[in-house]
Image (cartoon, rainbow, N blue to C red; front, side, top):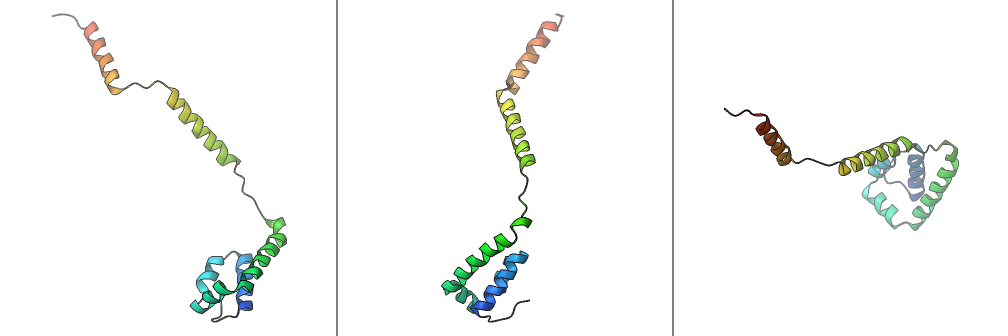
Length: 112
């Protein structure tokens, strides 16, 4: 896929292809140490990559799909509402419920 010991121009071409095709991690893994140093120290490479990003976003702007988060937001709102209702509802403690059972059974018992 990638050659070894590429020049700055070749690295830029490979970066542009990786950005276009969506495999930047593969591109980064393909770098040798020398290529990594070249990229890290080359201001020319970083200026060129910024230009590639801009051109890529302009060239594929009509194909860009933004996710629809309305379903996610409605589920989050429903969960928040549910939690607020649970927080406002009076809660019975276990001890309180046991005490009510005991008092009810004493009243209904007949003396022997």
